[in-house]
Length: 195
View 1 (cartoon, rainbow, N blue to C red):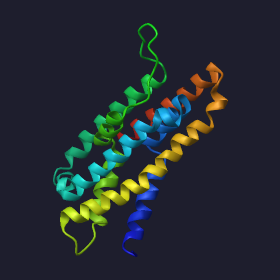
View 2 (cartoon, rainbow, N blue to C red; view 1 turned 45 degrees about the vertical axis):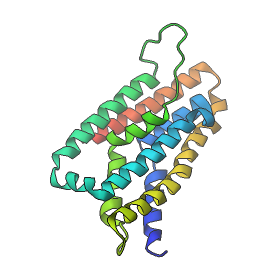
View 3 (cartoon, rainbow, N blue to C red; view 1 turned 180 degrees about the horizontal axis):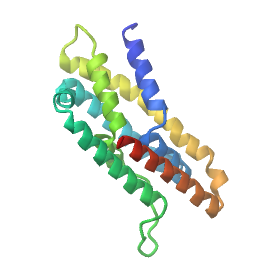
View 4 (cartoon, rainbow, N blue to C red; view 1 turned 90 degrees about the horizontal axis):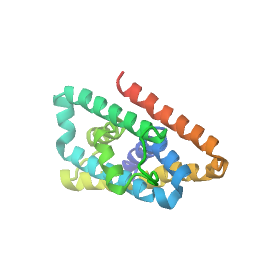
């Protein structure tokens, strides 16, 4: 149990601190409520667990062996965040009565593949927190399940924060301002990825 406490603490810190997932979930909670954001929350949680499992099985070694992959990942992640920021500001022309929708389970899960913060978490879990004395697959499964169990409530809190401020955004001007601020936060994160 004492070996799992640092793992759980690391997962908590990485899942609770601001990053692309949490900024998007705050905006989603404010715009679509928790129920509308739940597929996105589940997608991030499951996608991160699968990413951690794969990294623990050895994919993380690729990033160590080929540092250029970090650069590709940073650029791809930054571009995707800029697209999301553009959509959040309403920059994409909508056809007819099309209403913006929250990200789906699949979109939330697949975003983890280009989210540098998620890769840092997964590779660190694989390289630092794999339990000694366990087989690779069982250790990877344990680390992934612990990460999943901690990630879900942490990121849910961000979506619920969005829900909590939702009533302040009933005025369309305030909602546009809020979406603009969330889009700006995503754009800043994108620029930080490129540093």
